Amino acid sequence: MDENFFIASLIGFIPSFGILYFVWGKLEGAFGEKSLFKNYISGWISGLFIAIFFLILKASSMEYLDLSLFSILLFAMFTEMFKYMYLMHFARKIKRELSYYGFALGLGIGAIWLVAMMYQYITYIGDASIPSWLVDICFLGFSLSLSAIHASTGALIGYGIYKKDPEKYLLMAMGIQAIFNLSLLPFFWNLPAYFYIVSLPYSLVILHQKIYKGALIKSAPKEVRIRWIKERKNS
Image (tube, rainbow, N blue to C red; front, side, top):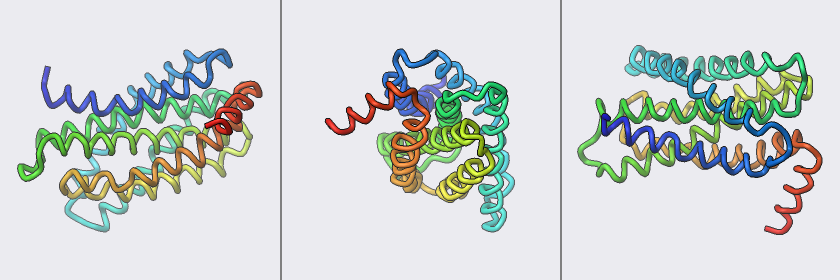
């Protein structure tokens, strides 16, 4: 196996698996938890095509500031519209699980996207002045950031569909993703890897405040919601 691909895969999947495992444990016995994993796998598959589209945009617009900005904002709309259309497939039977479906879908997308970006960086870009272990740490933080933001926007869209107010939450997800995508400019311009982690605080705040304390707990079954609140009070 290609060593670069192996390293990129590990760093891409570890954060998303960790977040998924944490949420999965919170939902034990509440509803079909296996659906989370199915949607996570769907995120892998769709994330592959999204990553290819992103790398094509990068190659065609990296030399121009205005085109780079337009591309990353366009890409925010594209990714969130995809999540919206995917989740609307389940909207015939409005379920509280939609927030969790979107959450898992976003985790899968973020994981595969990171694998593609890191593989391109360490294979074709690189920077001899930065030790490989530091590159790995920077991309691990970037992986956590990507997984957190895509899981967050997916959960928001699912929650909006569940609440029968999809347009409001879709626009919110697009706005959150557009702000995050500004942090992708260093990758567009082939800057050193340590620039890639600037979005980590933003992603984690969104995940904790808007999703963990917001959409996920609000759409959780009553017994799960009560358990989460007790755990937070005791922690």
